[in-house]
Image (cartoon, rainbow, N blue to C red; front, side, top):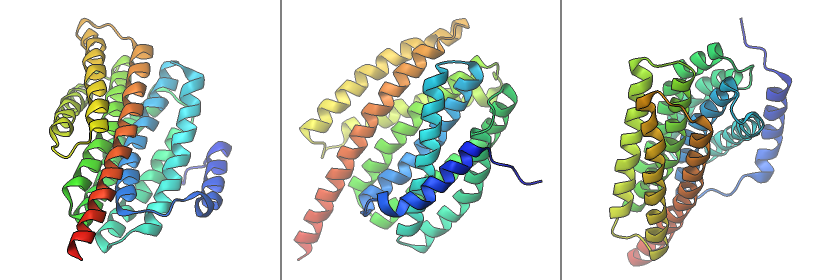
Length: 271
């Protein structure tokens, strides 16, 4: 039997459909990689906020952020579908759409431990399909600087994935898949940060911004380590991972600008 969307979901779809033509930026390849990377983050941010509602943590903020993230995912999906510069990108986006429809209906429905379990079950498939879109765009670009946009964008996703799987454990989901995903996301965030810091073409602004993230990451790990003692501080984790997201979003924008600059230089050199 098909899902019946709540009124709020129907309104978001309406607004996204009629506003995307007006609000959409003229995408460049760098901005398309940035936005497709943001889709990965939004999938995890939506999960995090649905779990926060199930936990009754920061309910007003979580509801507002969830609604905004659903609307933005919908809008950007349409932008990327219109922009898609190659057949592999179009094919990857075609995989995302049906997974997103199901995920969105759950996300906007009543939050409970049961709905959280359903979202956790579907989460990895949506994330994987969104990631494939980024990889296809990066492959189409064929530049090291485009890869940095991808990696920085993935750090945004990992900050929200870490929070989501922390909240899942606070809800009582403590099987090997949940704890393993949490540990993997933490490890990959640290590795990705190291890759960005080591990139030789970083500007002084990027180096300074990454240094701040490095300090914030060290502080965040202190809160995560309390899990080993069975102590959960979901409000603290919500605040720290939101800060990580904001900083990495700015940094991804800086890498997008760098990629555009380097791409322009390459075109000029070719002529």
